[in-house]
Length: 493
Image (cartoon, rainbow, N blue to C red; front, side, top):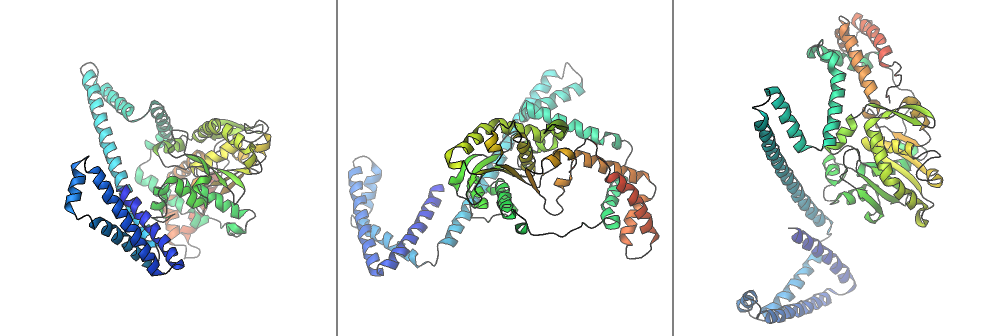
């Protein structure tokens, strides 16, 4: 199938060459030349069959199946038939059709591979867990046997480090929800959360100032380019599924990044697409339009990326002599990337071709958070890049989650430009903000009638002086103190 697609593309490229040739020569000259070349090729094929006839029965069969003069005639007709392709107005639509068919088969192959992998894993886990259970069932309690089965299944599916971090994330969520699960019923909590969602409509304030297109901001054009670098890291399949690029435009992750960033694949110097736990995918490329070397870090795509996202415990972190906290999982990812890439990036930017280029770190979501923390690790007098490269360092983070304490975030303003898309909740979400949200929902639930008043106020805002609206505003003012309260040493956007 791949050979067929290859030949199809080459035939279309040949048609384009023949069209340009026909523009320079007369049509009759082109046809006569192609017929002569085809006849010669057919004669060579016939001679080759005579040579090979003594080596196998296939060549003897082909010689006996057709008259010898048929071979030159067939070659001439084949190449003359190619002339008909020059009548096509453009090869572009046919290239797109070939690309679409090729990608359809690629997706079918990927689905088949995923299904077979899932079946193989399921069988392996089932056999291993059953074997472990049969081995201990007669010696331990049923509960212990079930735990052995669980641990055995987890060990067959995941690496030990992945199992350990999943346990950490599970215990963190258990602690987050533990003291509410016993006292709050789901309908009451959902009503309180729905009421909180009405706060903006009932007592919210419109943001001040006016929005401006990014290209009108100083340096906004370059920021747009680096945002496309960040998006291009999500791979050709994901970008096509999301509608960011067209089907038939590219056929690999490398081509997808080059397409999004408006560079050539040769400009991508280094890439790692799959990644692993606490090491997201990345690519190092040269952007000649902005005179930059760009390190783009991929956002959440694979299961190990989500474990990194949810490993959001506050971890002590120091920046320019100030102590605070950072997102544990993303800080670990930044430290791993720093250890792997700092020597490579530093030596690259000190070499002659790149000595005058700046270094830009970029990413989306998880990649944005890791890029910002990597910029923090590579800043300052102790930068592993060296003082000359560190002076050219900056970061553009698209949809960056909350990764450091507020006062540390202020210290990164000179290095990091955060791009927030409208009402994207990721830059506003953190462990601390989710805890404040939980506490506000519980406080609203515990106040008799407050949630119902907020919901009713949302439905009666057209009645001026409504008692329900006034009651809701009073509840909202009290809750706003909690929702906008000081976060202490927690992680806030």
